Length: 245
Ligand SMILES: NC(=O)CC[C@H](N)C(=O)O
Image (cartoon, rainbow, N blue to C red; front, side):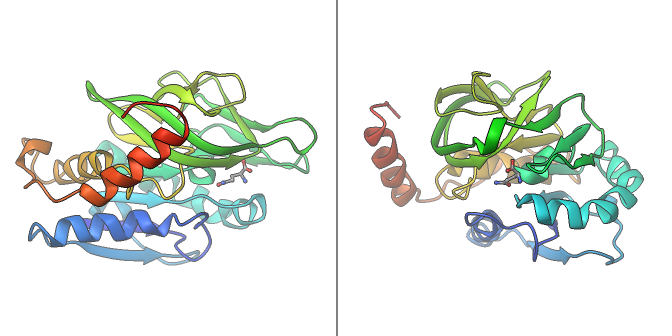
């Protein structure tokens, strides 16, 4: 499996790089070769040759700095998605795949415009911060996903949310829904990082990435791993929030 880790040195809030570490470990434990290429600003790369594109979250300053480079890759990212590359995007990265993002100081950042959603910063420095739990449908697989959110951006007009908020905010203060998922791209506000506490999502992402080269690959084809530590972490968070696993 080949992973393109976009702006690894810029977009890495609240442990987002842990997502890459989890993907590498879960592949290694199953004997699946996994190559990760870090792609920074100005670095040439044909993203359509990758099975997975990963972009983490970042503060407004970083988002502003990288946007010219990201926009210059627009056609190449479109080609990648059209040819079956899967994209996993966290928070600031998720925002930049929409129409636009209005930062806390009012600056408007044009997004890649692949989807109809847009993001505007909430009133007077208000932010969605804290543990978050959502119930998501991953290709009809109902999954309870746990994470941590910290964003000023309020994402509106999301036509295909990833899941329903059980605890926390999600796309905006009162949206009731979180993230975006359309089969080819999964965008979410969940940091924490996302994958260590949600092994099912990690395997789902691996399976989606594997499907680029092998369209008949199914998540059930992945050898089960010992997820008891993750299960313990999950039950601790859910218990704290008074929720069931
Ligand atoms: N956590 C993040 O990635 C932050 C994204 C964006 N800068 C916001 O505050 O909404």
